[in-house]
Image (cartoon, rainbow, N blue to C red; front, top):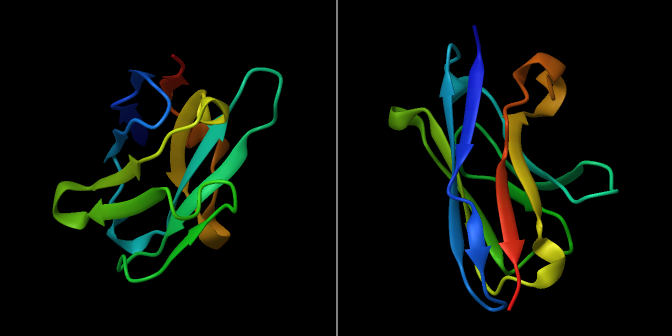
Length: 119
């Protein structure tokens, strides 16, 4: 059974930083593009960042470009999202899933990790 477990969220002041982790079990992430999404209350789930299997190519939503960095450690089967210069509008639950033509898979959504940016 495939399981994604997101962690690293929390409460941070505007301008602060957090590093999220996406650990996978039951699947070898090495061969997959992986996406980070977020969903704020009352909003649809939004694609935030994408990383290719090798990690050489990344894509970001315009709202986070220059502030967020996606990376991966294939040896640990884990993908990360470094979030800097956080803004209140970054407040959301953050999720990861496989991307590209294989994803996202509805049965792969985890519980997510809550990020709250507030003074």
